Amino acid sequence: MKMIKMALLGGAAMAVTAASAQADDLEALKAQIDALNTRVAAMETAPSVPTGYQLIAISEGELQETPGLGFTARERAAYGTKSTVISVLPTADAPAGTTITWSGYARAGLVYKNESVDASRDFYNWDQGNEEWVFDENESASGSADDDDIDVKARGQIRVKASTDTAVGEVGVDIRLRANFNGNGSGDVYSDVAWGYWAMTPELTFGGGYTGSLGNIGYGYDGACTCYYTDNADLAFNPNDTTQLRLSYGSGPVSFAIALEDASIRAGGDNFGADDVANEDELGVAGEMKYSGDIFSGEISGVWRGVNGDEYNTISLERDGEKADFDLLDSELDAMWQVGVGVGFALGDMANLSLAAAMGEGPLTEETDGNITAAVPYNQSWWGITGLASFGLTDGIHAEIAGGYKKREGDDISFENADADIDEGYSLTDVEYDTYGVLGGIYYTPVDQLTIGVEAEWYTTSTSYSVYGDENFDDNLWDTVEDVEVDVDTFSIDLVSVWRF
Image (tube, rainbow, N blue to C red; front, side):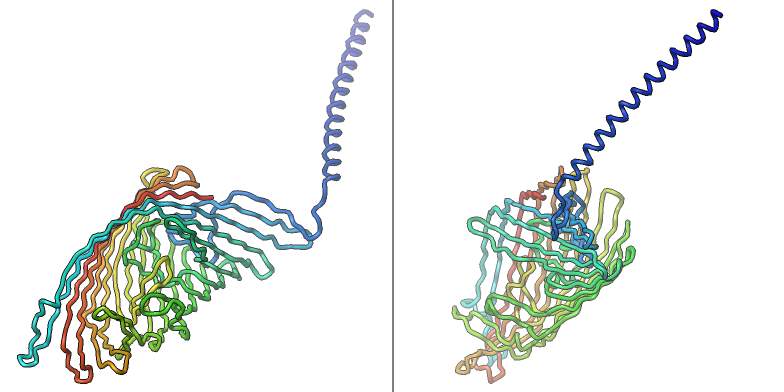
């Protein structure tokens, strides 16, 4: 009996303990339910998105390329790897969402430049009696000059890319604004890229606007360098930016593109007025084939643009201290074309090698920041080869060195004074222009938002030509000849800083 009594008491104690535990669990569960009810009530009382508005999300993302419009090596170095992403979330009545990415940078550089010039002119008179050229010491001359310049230069750049997924594919735009500054005064803001595109399929894209030509070679000295304030030598294989329509196809490492380009040139300088447009009735076509692999990459590019020779029928020359207009007589300028190749090799994780070569023909042009500032109205041909090697010294430090050579040769042309009352003519012959150059830089990027670097460049240009003159142009007899040689050595070094967002 005593044993039974003890067992009953133990069972009762266990029941009381279990009941107590269940009560504690019920209290905890009740607390969780109350908290959930509070959150639901708060959500129900929150204001809803008004009609006509959408939700957006802002985040940091990777720098995005525009379909059919890749970055050059210089653009990627300037913009960095990050951008701000604004995602416009779709609502019930708007199935497509929109993504806006924006990025930009400001840069400043302390730039030192030295330019030394050596020039000579050997002047000869024709001795008709002895049928020989006689050196004229009084008219001949030679001289040299040396000039130093130091500046603090700056640039501001903003890029906005917006895209929307539609029922027919992705549609978007890429707009970029730039302003350059040098000392006191404001900088003119202009757009260096204005582009729209329709990604019809993941492989096929149709685009149009203003950007670089497909004929540009994106390798070598000019195409692959970082070059914030260097790359001033005439070693580029770049047909200049222009308005165009483009069709691009890319699948895996292989891509193709073709573009219809406008061949008009808006140029200032001595040969054209600031508002004049040459070739305004001509078009062009450009194309490229690319392969992008982990170890090897390459491209073949070409461009052809029509040239209206009637727009290049006058040249302004300074003779005997006075300027005069002369009419061209035998210019064969009818097109600009260039074909070129570029190859790149990844030498492990530490180095990359980039090579470029091209040949072409067309009017000699001078440009600043991709815009033609002068066009010389005679046909000239060119060829060249350049190379660049870049090295990743540490995770945040990289260096590069480049070199190249380019040769230009101009056609022989004749021209006569445009003033009908002056019987005077000249002939320009044996025009040759050679450029050698090297550049280098080392850059420190501790974070994505900041780069500090030191750059330097040296290049030399040698120009030679002969000018035959005739005061009585109708007699077909040259009276004088000038043999001119000009050598220009240019050296620059800069300290540059780039700040990004």
